[in-house]
Image: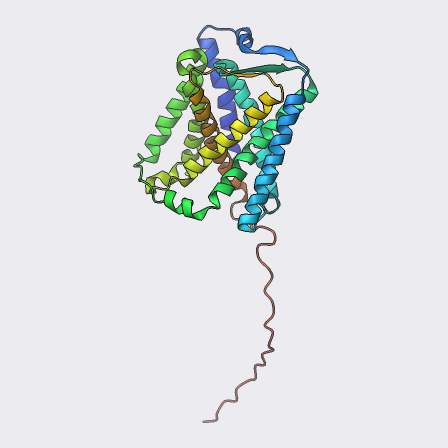
Length: 302
């Protein structure tokens, strides 16, 4: 798990920078798409509050519908997911320096950076809890599990193709953002899926081979809900956030892509608890309530 995440982070940091240098551009040119620095932290604080309240509310609905409290039964998992989500948020903000798909204020205070980190840390847990709530509706889950099977090529071919596309996206998206910005944003998910296949692990798309579309659709819808909630909360609170995309629908596709990325990241983190017994899952065997007395049987003499 740690090796895959290390490769993922290193690739997202180094490949776009290499593409920028290969194109002849300079680092200081990336700051042109940023809005002026500001000391306002109210928008980030309100977004953190909205996301935290939303996540706790969805967790409560999951408990009501299923009888299980994910934040209590899987506390360490969600803490690890939140930490990974914070790192992922800053990595995507770093990629946006090359793609300039949105413009926001530059943070120039420790408090503002702290609230942004908390905001990023809440995104993946919000997506996963939303997906858990939608997945509690078993009727829809069964229908989506009987979808049209999607034939997938061999794992070796998938790894080669996905790694190639991810490398082109991270390199070319930084060098020619106007033409390849879409591939730059798809690249993180492609890279993470390719790494999973290299380690012979399942991916968010593994179920498509048997016609199970539930995980893909649920994760996409959850990403769209959480993405729109976060952006609208930030903008309504007075934050300056401008989406620089040719079509507004591309933003919705980006939120859906983020939901898939969060689910795949959550699957990788969950491997750390694979095979481990959850506390309280099994109780010690109780003694049989009726005493049983075993007497030796006398042998007959020949």
